[in-house]
Image 1: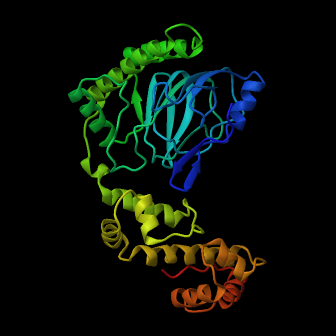
Image 2: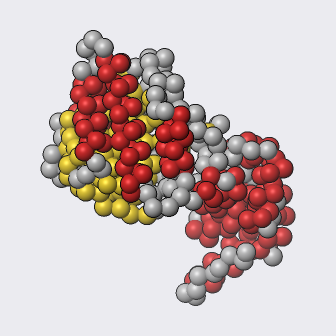
Length: 349
């Protein structure tokens, strides 16, 4: 098994999950586990030229209460999963769901999610991660050539997956049967005609998902696919420090990270936060630095400045004074005194 799958986007990455709890559960006999992988995920490694775009596929069967769960992660592709039996907590973009037997899930590459809160429940779970060439909501999807749905059907499936981001759906007998056949194909990977068999059942699964979404999906929101939304998601990641604020960000790099040109990215940024990209980046860096000054009184001001992307302590001090009206050291002293009196200071925005 590989040990460090990642969600890659340029130089940035998000841990998917360390796989260590899952690997330990397999080693200790707590779960039955079968999977195929292209190298970023646990399982038997398959050559990249076999069914291109298929990143990971497999299933596990967990008996009894478990003492492990998957960490919050994003995938290098769209993930479909089915909880065939059992129950489990499921969290997507900080919203909690309770999966029951017969639920199938859909998560896009930009959706942060995890299974277990903190531990998974007993049950049998199937999954498939398929790379369609996107990392951001506005980017066009490129399905692998082995997907043989009719052009109109594939366009409909793409539209439904892009314009509705509800992660939890009710499975159908067709979806269940397709996942069961895929599980059999994964187990029998060393048998003749395994690739053809796997491709057939993958297409059957996609048709089943299209039928289920056609029946259950009540609305579509085209605004989910706009470039403005991609910019908004990136700015929120900056605000939460979900992307590394110490990165040597430039305007070009931020725009490239979001998959668009500088002009469009700057336009949407100003519309959303009433500030240019670099100005907003510095605001986020300064806000996190101020929190560190409060919470880590023993850390040096210079170390905090470097941690949040300022390469010169004097420049950091100048920008800090502009934002908070005092030097970093004065801010720390003032907040130490106020906190000591029982009050929590607020950061001026």
